[in-house]
Image 1: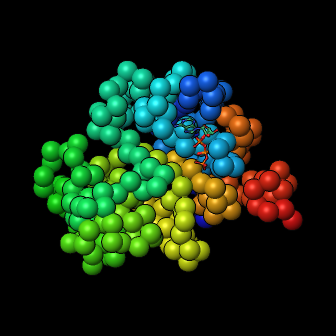
Image 2: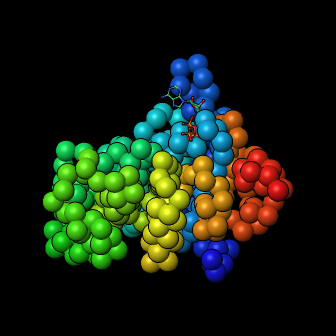
Length: 250
Ligand code: ATP
């Protein structure tokens, strides 16, 4: 991927000293990272390292200590701890969760309409639906089909498209490749690259480190609730620590 200049860009998200406990288990200890406007940033790491918990904390889906600062669509920097959870999407942060979370008994169209629930701009919603179908022609073909009857790859496309219908400025994607065949995984990563090239900032959680690093401007490695190191995606692809632990060795 062509390197995009990031030095001059502003933070859209700044996470500092994030800590989360589930009962007595401390899932995150002190996680700090940032995402700049226009970037794809990945969090990679082993099963149970804390990647999903990090995204859930950013979206205020779990209680946390530390701070999450988000630059809203209007340019105001918000401390997300002070924003009611259901209003976060309206400020420009959309979350496509692990396991996709589509509504299986609703049609593709109804799922997409649900994605726009926080919006009132009816005409623009209709236009965005058309744009969405242009980006995801498979969804257009299956518009009246119940989401639960779609293939895994199509459900993942629907989960991404539904999040985009909120018209966010930052898209959180949790394990979009989970459970999908390699060919479909490649398609999903192409879609993420395309969305980003059209201006969407993406924070991606992935166990498929190779694919994630290939499309990421920068990445952070999460190990047992902490960031152990970080770097540019293409540099990390050649880093022996990544090769040995996350890319199956030399
Ligand atoms: P995975 O790829 O398996 O989702 P992850 O890096 O996203 O891994 P998390 O799901 O964030 O990791 O889990 C971090 C730690 O928190 C793990 O030890 C996990 O067992 C624990 N954990 C996650 N969710 C809960 C929960 N709801 N209750 C208790 N412990 C949890």
